[in-house]
Image 1 (cartoon, helix red, strand yellow):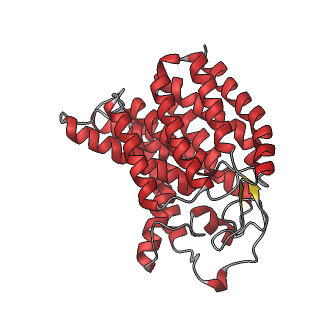
Image 2 (cartoon, one colour; image 1 turned 30 degrees about the vertical axis):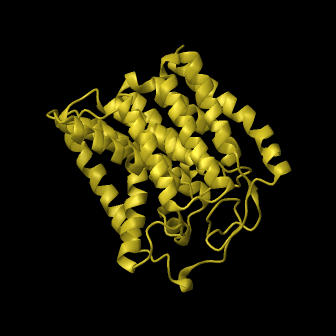
Image 3 (cartoon, helix red, strand yellow; image 1 turned 180 degrees about the vertical axis):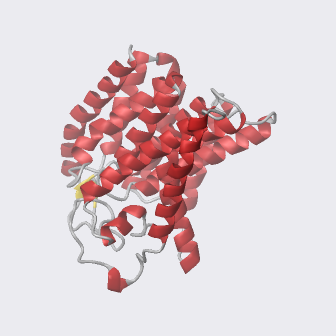
Length: 335
């Protein structure tokens, strides 16, 4: 199967299954209800993550059945998220599950070959998988944002390292298909079922791509296409630590919320996510071309990321005085 056909199968299966799963969630009352840290004013159905998983599974089983072990791990990660969606899991329990699944992936050979030490490589791989899984979980804070970030990062990864398409493009296709029902105003949420599965899949894809190079080039391929997720996670962690707030709790202090405070519309924010994801990947692609002179073009892109990060850090999302009137936009934590 060609890469284009793989992404099309994932897109179509996810899109087609989203509607019956939405009706099923409505019938059984499997909903994301408004809460203290959520700004949407009406319940929105969950189970979008199951549509994402089905789309990925269909594309993988048709295009590259040899990847079935990773598909099993993706299903386990989705199951962990589903339990959290249906019945809240404490942070420690979810973390233990994520570490167990990441450790299984490493034991099955999905490890980042950065050093000559297997123990160091395995430890870094588990840390990356768990970290990126939770980064995408945190990034799922606005309609369409996690889907957009995942699709862009994965497509960019497949462009930089074409051999990575067999996992990257089914995941990207599923994210694109779900974006149809998850864009503002969202008709359905992926929940932790989808965000944990997507984040884990992105992490495994990036490790596979990074193993196509060595040393610093490997690190660049691993991290730069995921720049948006790391941008948001680092912004939130630094901001919460600086203000004495718990890092593990949800909140309206992500880059998307800060841009809303600055007057940006949801679609403008999704546009920024699109540009930011591909800009990070372009920065990485240029950087690994060193010693070619074009590699230096990565420097202004990197400086722009740093300037944006510092600028958004200065936006205060915690002061009640600066919060605009809550606007119902069908998502999880909106301003």
